[in-house]
Length: 405
Image 1 (tube, helix red, strand yellow):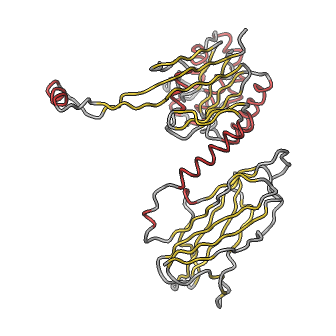
Image 2 (cartoon, one colour; image 1 turned 90 degrees about the horizontal axis):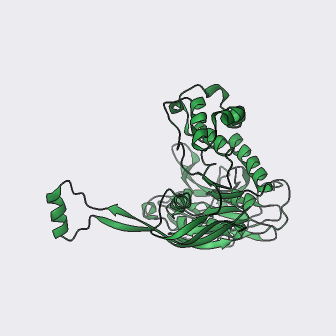
């Protein structure tokens, strides 16, 4: 018997996107005489090939618009490819569209039986598993309400609870954790642990790199419709994180030309506890006024790990640490030993403060925006328990200071 659960061979898929509207024969004729086709061709997937073996927990990652959902719909036989083929060895259950198979005018209870029937269960079989489905979804008190009154999170919990009861060889999941609350996500993680032990075949599409590292034994990364990385899930997840940061860093900053801003930058993003983190802080103040800034490191749950207010050039009468007093762009470098950090993802934020004469105090005038926050990842072969032994204020070293007018 074949060890392959799924084969994707030289898959191409494109869509025709309308560019001109023709409300009648006359307009269509005018468009034709002008050489206007009325559509443009968008290539979504370009020569995609990979194999999923039986028992694989296979991850698919990539930024929005890279072709992940289209690929899953081709695998699930919802779309047909332009060329290439998908070979599925066994029964495949896709969980890729929230609410597919649900009727919003029916109650939660009625939708359980309806969705169960669509998955091939008899009425008696659904009855036998009904209590387990409702218990997993934690929706006991809502089952006699119409589905249209459910939140999106409640709907996905119910749909997922039904789907995992299906007798399937391959389970396809698309961002199932995206709308679940923390308690539901823990249940999903426990379920993933169980099916991983049972060697069931799972294809998981997600933006959560922690899940890729935790559960997947293989992964691919899509970019602009092509596979740009495949194989070890840790390497694929690290590449995705780095690519995501670099793409964000290219965001247009023209709006900041005459507005105060503050940025953080980390060149080496994947580190070990033996390394030293090097951080560059850059800020712009558009007018002459006393300015200072603060830096914080947060973990993946947004817990503050450590922080520091810059030691500054001098201290004023109010004991406020000042970094500059003149208009301009300033750059500082800091270092931080990572010996107390373990396997986690971290981000660095900063706040710029300026003196407000009316309030006679220092007030924040700029924060690191989403594209200006730096991220780094601590990785080690043998992860230690716990998060981090709090260091308090980090031991920072100012190695460079420059001002550009």
